[in-house]
Image (cartoon, rainbow, N blue to C red; front, side, top):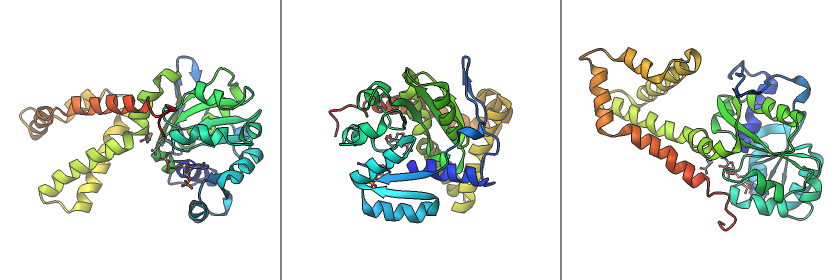
Length: 291
Ligand SMILES: NC(=O)C1=CN([C@@H]2O[C@H](COP(=O)(O)OP(=O)(O)OC[C@H]3O[C@@H](n4cnc5c(N)ncnc54)[C@H](OP(=O)(O)O)[C@@H]3O)[C@@H](O)[C@H]2O)C=CC1
Ligand SMILES: O=C(O)[C@@H]1CCC=N1
């Protein structure tokens, strides 16, 4: 996930056209995310990993715009030299990484943005110093191609400049929204895990096409474009998904035949329960007893 964020950010800075050109402003209540502020952009990148082999791989993937460090000494050096630290380790190792010698001191008066599922702002604050500003972010893998969905939650000491800096980064990687932390487990399930669920649906739709004689590559292209097209109709027109479904459904036609088959398979409750179960597990991921 860390690679997806750096890759998307580098592409946005290079003005790549394979990307979302005008990220949407999003808001909850009167909290609005400002998506454009040239003075609050990252100017350099250091990536820290634990293994030398990962560092070698990362250098190849990210090129010379990113300095790659590894091991504990690398973490201390990287955090010391950075103004903003993005924590992208597994949730279960977050505490150990932050509690390691030299890290707390290096984090003083800096911004720590954590993408670790299930790790709360209170936990992160207790593992750092009171002068460390904490923001929780829940991005997803399409950030890599700047079609991501990220939700941010801030700690009590988060100031507007830190929030703007963080929302600037994630707004260039797709859509970005600020929500209260109580929503983050649901967000993790729906948006963070969502690309996996969407790809299972996509693959199953393509399987149906293959069953009816379409070549696999054609079936996959059709299924992907259908999901993208339907999703974009919801996002760009604001139409209710049910009204788009109804507009496709000719009385006595083939769409209603397919829809009834989906309902027979309880697809709605299966998908909704998928999000419920993933959110329940997400809420446990930051537990300190888990290793
Ligand atoms: N995957 C996803 O779609 C999403 C993931 N997340 C969150 O992102 C986080 C990472 O997930 P994911 O990218 O899948 O996991 P990965 O295992 O792919 O990445 C974890 C990274 O952390 C590094 N790391 C581990 N221990 C240390 C350490 N002690 N010091 C420095 N670096 C270390 C690893 O380096 P090395 O390989 O050398 O060990 C690796 O680069 C998780 O907390 C997850 O909840 C959030 C949203 C979406
Ligand atoms: O599966 C996980 O735990 C992570 C969090 C969201 C997506 N992947």
